[in-house]
Structure formats: C-alpha cells, structure tokens
Amino acid sequence: MSMKLGVNIDHVATLRQARYAGSLGSHNCEPDLCTAAEVCEQAGAHGITIHLRADRRHIQDADLAALRPRITTKLNLEMGNTPEILAIALATRPAEVCIVPENRAEITTEGGLDAAGQSEALAPTIARLQEAGIRVSLFIEPATVQVEAARKLGADMVELHTGAFANACGDEQRAELERLIAAATLAHGLGLQVNAGHGINYENIALLHAVPHLAELNIGHSIVARSVFVGMAAAVAEMLEAMRRDPR
Ligand code: PXP
Image 1 (tube, rainbow, N blue to C red):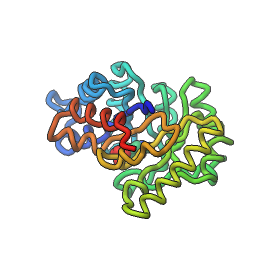
Image 2 (image 1 turned 30 degrees about the vertical axis):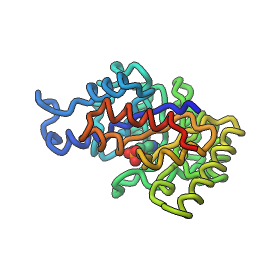
Image 3 (image 1 turned 90 degrees about the vertical axis):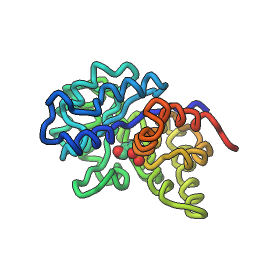
Image 4 (image 1 turned 60 degrees about the vertical axis):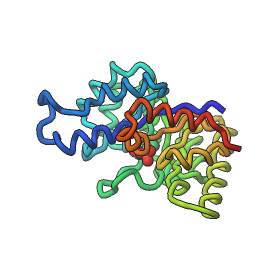
C-alpha cells in the first residue's frame, strides 16, 4: 500500500498566533508557515493542508496567499461551506478543497459533514469549485449514507473521519476500524478517492493499514507535537516510515 501524507500545518500557525496574533506582519512573527511547509515537503510530505476557519484562529488569509505559490507538492484547503470562504477558495485555487463542518465553539473539527442532510447547500459549492478546476473532498463519518451522498453530490474524494477510531480503545476501536473498512470499500467501489484524517498518530497508524484503498492521510496535531522534540523534518519522516511499515 502506498498511502500519501498531507501534513496539516494549522498548529504551526496556532503557535505563532499564541504570541503574535495582535502584531502579524511585524518582522519576527515566528514560526514561519512557508518554511514549515517547505521543510515538510523536503522531508517527503506529498501535500500541505491548511484550514482557513471562519474565526481565523490559526491560519490567516495572508498565510493562504503566501503558501499558494510556495507549495511545490499540492495545497489542500479545508473549509466550511460559507460564501466568504468559498470566494477565497475560488480566488486562490488550491489543488484541492476538503469541505468540513465548522462550529465556532469546537476546539477542532468535531464530527463529519452531513453530506446527506445538507446536499442542497453543498451541491452548488462543489460545482463551483470543480468548475474552477479544484478537486473536491468531503470530510464525512464512515457511514454508508454519507458515502452514498458524497457520490450523489459528485465529489471527487471523501476524507473519512478517523476521530471516533482515534478516541476509542479495545473492542470499541475494533468496531470503529470495521466502520472505516466498510466505508472505504464502499467509497472505492463507487469510484471515489478515499482519504482519511483526524486524530491519527504514530501509534494508531499501525491499525489503519487494515483499511483498504486509503490514498491519502491528512495528519496535523501529532506531527506538530512530535516536531517539538525531534524537529519537523524528522517528525514527517517518522510518520512516512510508520505509513510504509504494515505490521500485519
Ligand atoms: N482532516 C480534517 C478534515 C481536519 O479537519 C483535521 C483537523 O483540522 C485533520 C484532518 C487533522 O487532524 P489532526 O490534527 O488531529 O491530525
């Protein structure tokens, strides 16, 4: 299996915002996001992922503008389905967009997008992004109804939400893994590219080898956390190695 790795660098921006939120643009706003993206790419990452949230808690509009021409792999923009962010995506034209649910009070994206329940609102957004040449992914729970809705909506890809899997342990985790296996099998059978993300770390990655057809994983927090101890390049390289090492 050759899963690709998209590194989510939102939390590099979180670290910068902790100190410089009020003085962005001053000369010493570190850590620099473009440098982070470059180091990830040089370490072998296949893409860079960022989430421009409505509340701009980490990634800023200027980050997106600066990163867009600097990224040599591909930029995957995560976004909520709002007119404001859609306009920014259409103006910036990342290679890919992953539409995610967004709730201001959440610490990170909680739960998947209700592709089945929100199809009317999603259809025009997906169409406009695709017309602009942007491949569209929907971040959904590993559930039949959501996978089928993503297919009906004409999405190019689904990103299966691995949060429940990551939070569970023992039998519960096994059950979550089965849900991911079933959803990935269905999505692939329907012609969708299958990605996964959220809460994936250096330990639970071993279990994800059981999920078939995974094309790409989007991983953020665990890599940025690991980079505190070993540096970003080593943290990315270690994750790539864990993705190659199928323990079964
Ligand atoms: N994929 C999506 C759609 C996300 O919203 C997030 C979190 O921003 C991630 C992947 C990365 O999750 P984590 O930071 O837990 O690796």
